[in-house]
Length: 580
Image (cartoon, rainbow, N blue to C red; front, top):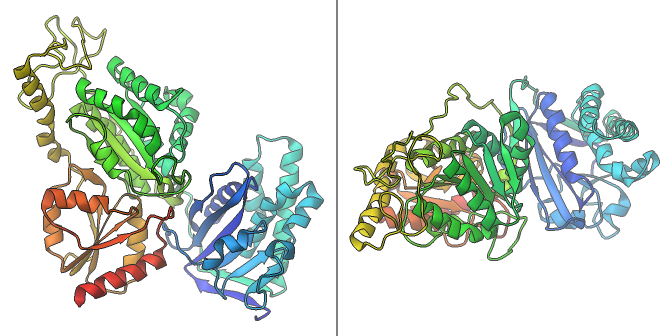
């Protein structure tokens, strides 16, 4: 290969770091994304990791760009393997254009160095001289920062900030490590060995850098959440951890319950007492919550459920991603009662829809789901500050009178919701079928009236619909349908098709299905749906409510998200069949 390894001036560069759990790969992700943003670059980061506390192989991808980037790509421009086995872990993504920065002993003797752009960089040896191999990740941070031309002061300032809670000795050693790494990177640039050129940076100081879990949690705070009870379960735990960290500032009670059954019942008790509560869980945890979900249906209790999906059944692939719990959320629980399902595709959607979830749950006294997945909750990118111009919180609680009836039969199906101690009335609720006052009944005619009353709320929900988002030409011939976390991946893939007759239709409200859905689908010559599951669950829901069967189904269920390049190829195949 050529001695000079030039990354031509381009809009974005993809950096991948790979190593064992415990080597601090996530720390590198955190440091580099913040440092690059401070330097004026747009960033996107996503990770994939094995279910290991120590060992296994984890990788993180960081895209650094002069333009907004918000999706995973297969391409690797710079690879930093920090452990033996790392190259093999990502070798299908390595091309002759990939620059590999690593030590020879990490690469191994069986790797074809001659056919690749390989540079021997002493990450581990340098770290050992400082105080141990643990510092090799920070050495790598310094090296990459130098390659991107970020000044050492910006890099060192954030490293000191990141480690400020540690001892002075640890802080100083990390500063030495990042300086040593920076010198290595600078040496590669000055010697002409590597040149990394990227289009100019911008002023991003007013933007925020958050991941999906933080966006959901911030939306919960904006929605008035003051109680969260959950049992930790990947990948949902980030929401619980974030709200627990903000509990003191926002008056939130954060309770780590002994199990998911206790968690959902605590949340229902909190709503009964007048709080605004949520639970955050994944598929296996939600399975334990389904009896509590049915209890919410019978009590007509509001509740917000964040369901961060991962592959099942059972434990499945606990640290991977999938969109396979849509039907679980839609049909979970016994009996018939209304619910609302929301699936954010962008970080701003996660904020606004989670906030809206509390409003909908409170107003209609129904369970509201926020469906995310591992890819979504663990992905970072910089974005504009969330709109806080309207911060009012409308609470739909009435002051009770002496003749108060919790389940009064009303024309619209919504009974007045009181809470104990607010007024003179008795707020009686029961898990059995009940009369208007909340007392157990086996009056079968009243049973029919109560079921009809609860289901009548579904007639009102279209008034609160979040419509699907159409991106692209309104006179499209080809339409790509997606939901939830695939939004930005599909958006970038459609943009690379170089076709002016393709549009994207993203659904952030999954149920009730927004009105007008059929009109969008009937307008297209060919429609393809993109889902991260094996049975195209959303396509089945669309067919159930519109009678339209989307024939072109692009499905992925290996535990990983789509890469943009992969989706471009599969979309081209689908639309080629549509023209035949």
